[in-house]
Each structure stands twice: as C-alpha cells, then as structure tokens.
Image (tube, rainbow over all chains, first blue to last red; front, side, top):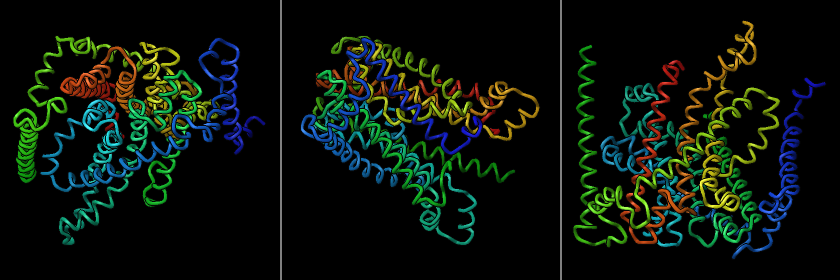
Length: 262
Length: 271
C-alpha cells in the first residue's frame, strides 16, 4: 500500500494539501496559544482581510486598485526597457565599435542595484510617476541588454559560415540568422527582468508613494497593522507568481522550437 | 600555424583599437558631465554635482562624518556586517534544506508546496513585517537578508542535486554504495557548479536587500547615508554612496569568484 501510494498520481496533490494545511495550522496554533499573537495575526485573519480588502478601501483604493497601479507602472516602464534593451543588446552584438563605446558605461552602472538609485531618482524626477518608471527601467534594461547581446554573439558560427559561403551579406546574416537565434536568450532576459521589475516597483513604492501594493504594506507598517502588511504580501506573491507563469506560457506558445529546461 | 598567428595578431590589433574607442567614449562622457555641471553651470550642483565635486566628496567622506553622522567606512562596515550575518545563516540553512529536499522525494512532496508558496515573494516585501516584529535594529535587517538569501540558495542547491544523472546513481548503487555515500560522492559534486551559482545570486540579492532595508528605516549603513543625503540635498554624497555600493558589490562577487575557482577546479570544463 505504501509504495503504491507514493507512486500514484494522488501523492502530489494530497501531500501538497497536507503540507500547506499543516503550515497554516502551525501558524494558527502558534499565534493563538502564545504571546506572538499580540504582534502577529493568524492565517484566518490575514485571509479574511485579504478577501475583504477587495471591497473595502485601504487609503484611496481597494487592493485591486493598488495592484493595478503597481502593475501599470511595471507595464509601461518594462515595455520601454525591454524594447530599448533588445535594440541596444543586438546593436552591441552587431557593431563592435558601438559595443566598445557603450560597454564602459554599462559596466559602471550594472553593479549598482536599481534600488540604490531611489534617492537620486527622487532628486531628479520628484515624487511622481517618472521616478518609478526610471527605477523599473533600470531594473529591466541591463538584464535584457545583456541577454540580447549574449544571444547575438553566441550564434552557432557554422550557421554564419554556411550563410556567408552561400553569399549572404552581413545585414542578411544579421536579419535572418542572428536575430532569430538570439530570441531564446532575449526571452530568458525578459523573464528575469520582469521579476526584478516587480520587486523594484514594490521597493520604490515603499520608499515614496501614495498608492500601489508597496505603499499598502509600508502604510500598514506605519500604523502597526500587521493584517494589512500580510494581505499586501499575499497579493505581491500572487502577482509575482502570476507574472512568472504568464511569461512561461508566452515562451511555450511563441518559442515552440526551443523550450528551455523542458 | 603561421596563419593562426597572423589572425591572432589582427584580432589583437582590433581589440586594442576597441579599447581606445572605449577610453575616448569615457573621456567624452566625463567631459560632457563636467561641462554641463561645473564648466557652464547649466545644472545646479543641488541636482547633479560635477565630477570634481564627487571626486572630492568621495575622498573626504573617508574621514568626514558630516552630514549624516558617520564616515563612509563606518556606514559600509555596518551594512556589510548585517549582510554577511544574514548571508551566512541563509547559506547554512539553505544548502542542507535544498539537498534534503532534492534527495528524499517523500520529504520533497511535503516541503516543496510550502516553499513554493513563499518563493515568489521578493525579500524586500518582508521588510515591513520584520520591522513591526523586531524593530529597526540589526535583527530585522538580518532576517530580511536571511530570507532573500535562503530562497535563492535553496532553489539552486535543489536544482543542482536534481541534475544528477540517474545512470550515475544506478552505477553507484550497483557497486554497493549506500544512499548516503551516493549523495556525498555523486550528487553533491554534480551539484557544486549550480550551488556556486546560487551563492553568487544570493550574494547579489543580499546586497540589494540590505540597501532597500536601510533606505526604508535605519540609523546607519550605506543605504541610510544616501537616503539622508537626499533630504539634505547633497547629491554628491548620494553618488559617492552609489559608487561605494557598486564597488563593494563587485568586490564581493569577485571574492566569491575566487572561491568558485578553487572549489570547482576543472569541474566546469568537464561538463
């Protein structure tokens, strides 16, 4: 019985249910039976708060409104950064002189985490939307650029040699071989960038903002409302998970010929 | 052979040409920066200080504690201390957990769902929780760093162990090795490159997280320094701080690279 259970298709969902239920149960008991309960709400409180905040405003918006604010910031800045990053990375791969001129700046800026730009960005762009766009742009741009560049220079040299032997020009090789071959790399870069954009928007909103999921958890901290913080964290986790799943879905649909790590 | 050498020397000449382009581009960039700030005074130093001012602030910050109450090295020391504390604990818990999860499928079935539940939450989001629970001292920041390190390390160790080829395990078992022996002599060596990647990713995450935590609520540390300088309109100190953050991050990564080379002697090339 034992062996067949572990190998059956039920093993996974049942153990997942038991483990998550156990986790929540330990949380619940820990909070209710010790002094931890004074600081920490239990799982039922957090979940009911999370569901309730869909209809009750926190600050100016419901939780859905805050999530949409954060997501719209990511959507705008992330698209611009991906577009610019792909062009920059491919151009670096195509024109070595451009790479030589651009690379030093890239290498200087890359090791600085986007979050460290927050004070400077506020000084330059004020407290408005532009600051957040700038920070998300920074978070997404370097990863996309680097991956597009890696994709462009790591094309199978035999393919290029064959094309050149058949009389293709440099431009033709770039258009018909280099770009398609670097798409999987670009996608990998865009996936990493999306999750770091999401973390960055939360951080930027935490430091200075009046709406968004990051604001929601930091205002919960200021009024000592742990339920609001934890409800916000649940939303951050769910959206982060949703974004990653969405990117994997897109990759599966668009890059059928090249599925990484399948 | 001769041809090889000539191609090599051509490439070398091209390469040195590119280095000259890089240098020229950097010089032009710094000149433009100087021109618009200190040269023509187009941009106020309250918005963007010039290169000379930043350079001076960088060196004076080593012994001047104004305007934020500590010198650069004191701030850096405080940040590094918390980062390393959280990092070491995160590594010490994350590696064994990743190994056990990957090696014992029954344990994996129960541990993985809870882990997957917590994984998509960026470390930064835990900052408010930790501040409410532990205040703004060392403990809360250490916890936040720990969480972001722990997740990255566990995932990479787990993936590394799972990459062990079944054939290798079968061979080991066929020759009479126990499960534990196989783990230590087959699976863990297989996982080492992935594990080192995890250490590197986690270090970057730790360094980013500590900066965010200090920006938000702190009384010292490099993140605190740049946040204070913003309120005091001292962008030169902000830039000094950002440079220090970038250099420290690179140095830490470089040290880890040295360790990686020692640990992985020739293992990467075999793959």
